[in-house]
Amino acid sequence: MKLKFRTVFISDVHLGSNGSQAKEVAKFLKCVSCDRLYLVGDIIDMWRLKQRWYWPAEHNEVVRRVLKMIKKGTEVVFVPGNHDEAARQYHGLEFGGVKVEPHVVHESADGRKYLVIHGDQFDLVVKHSRVLSVLGSVAYEWLLRINAWYNKCRLLLGYKYWSLSAFLKLKVKHACTFISRFEETLMNEAKRRGMDGVICGHIHHSERIEEDGVEYLNCGDWVESCTAIVEYQDGRMEIVNGLDLVREWEIEKDLRKQELEAGEFAGSVADENEEDEEGDDMLMPMGGRWRYLLKK
Ligand SMILES: [Mn+2]
Image 1 (cartoon, rainbow, N blue to C red):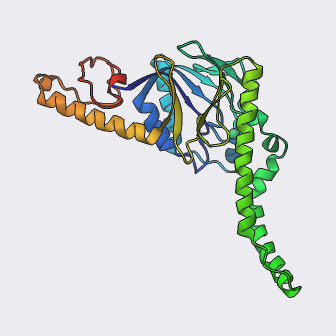
Image 2 (image 1 turned 90 degrees about the vertical axis):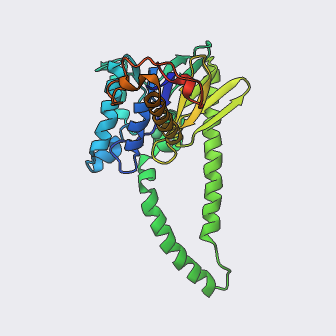
Image 3 (image 1 turned 180 degrees about the vertical axis):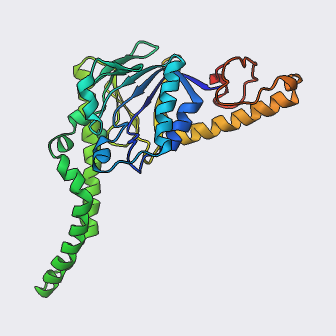
């Protein structure tokens, strides 16, 4: 029993870094089934792995889930990002059922064309100074120290206090303009290519915008927000919260089990092991939000 979608898009899982919510990703993949799964980049954090090897069992579980989906007939397309850019050299190839492409065009059920791309290609700051982003946190500590010293000097000279926090707030504002510029750039690129929209990741900020007939969809990430994009059978796209979806699925599953146990089929209730999705073709009364999606 799974939530059946036409397509599922996830990005920025960052497996191999300790920020990755790998356990939640695995749970999410366990409760969905789809014709096609797009891995929209930064799935494996090779930058981190190069610094320090970190690969707990939960991270393997995600890989296992994906392979299992392939076995069940899901087509998996991997569109590498900047953290797994090493995979980009294998574009056009297929590894155990996973197709690797630098970017692809996805056609929705209702005929709209979406450019599927990680998005770092349009992020000039990251593209040209990878070192800068790595140095970010170190720089911040230095900034605090320098700030204390700087303000001491200012006070001695009779100037008033210069606020670091106000400066950082301004930086956050800049981050917002960065996000909107990123969104704008990607929408322009989609337009330039004659697409109806773009589906990307990279900035860890899930969002849906429609402007001038062009749609922008960002998958978000599985470090903080745990979001994904799903396409329903009729072509509708939606950003979903993966944690909520798993929770609702678990509730449905319990309900279903109770109903079955209470009903005349009580004798035939198989132990609902994750592996035995085949063969349970009970008709369910329509109820919860996800119920109509449940695969029979
Ligand atoms: Mn990225």
